Image 1 (cartoon, rainbow, N blue to C red):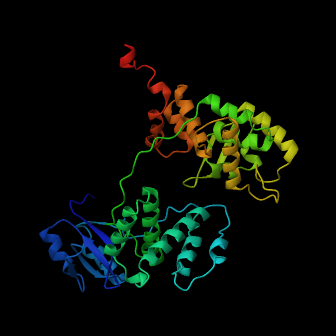
Image 2: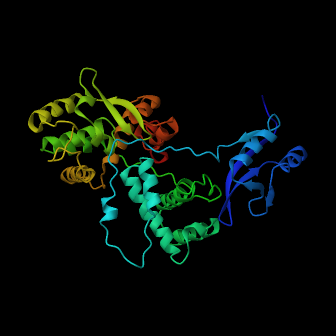
Image 3: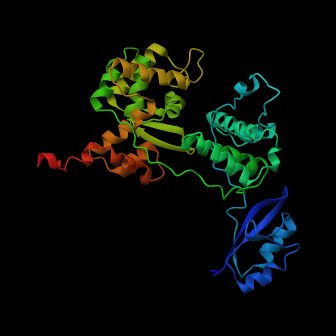
Length: 376
């Protein structure tokens, strides 16, 4: 059945009480029907009708408008995109911090929700840090009494302090997490504006530079790490999650699990890298993870960062090189070699080719057919 009218239901918080907001285009039939709801009121601030948030009222909304209008509940019912990570929730850094009387700390309920939703430890640290900065900006106010205008004021302060778009987005996400997830008010802050996204081109190294980095790394374990990051286009976290069984030498593929977005994929295994991996395995004898710490735990992200940085310095590369730059270089070099962008998308684990298309802006092959006007 197709409906010509639809009503969007949303969570509203008015005078610290929960309500169901009903948003729709002006229509006489809907105006008459909406007034059949018990305790219905109009909000000038939100420009919509609202009723107390309880099950009888929610049932009445569906009953009264049945067959008349489509009830759009995407802003009302809570969904989670949290990644089901295979890692132990660890907030030792939070528990072991020195305490100060003149500082507001993250509510325990906030930490519990982060744990229940299995957020990554790095995300937890970012959210907690950003949320504490927010609540301490309003040190003399109760956080449950803060509204959208207070949040806008805080975001304006961050802009004036010239904080990055990335930090501002994390701040918004950490605030939304509290009000929408912890307090159970999904999409309460749907009207909060986010900073405009800047398109930043990826930094890419020449193939010769990367080969020099690998050749300048005599430690076989470190050599395999640098080689895998580039030749398989892996994220640092994906490299650290690799297990021995994920290396499929018979098909020359690597099975990437626990990837971004809770997805799995296969990517390429280089013959040269496989030879180094066999030498590494005989010498280091890892038991579970492909790369392990001395205590047989998962290898440290910081250690990977240092290995890549050291290799770049030895190779006399002036650019600041990170693990992710090796991934960018993998994608760009494939594109320059004529690989279809859809295959590159699959190898990188992107949900859409739109994400992968960023590499067309830096691939040298995109400009090879263009003659410089000075040379004409």
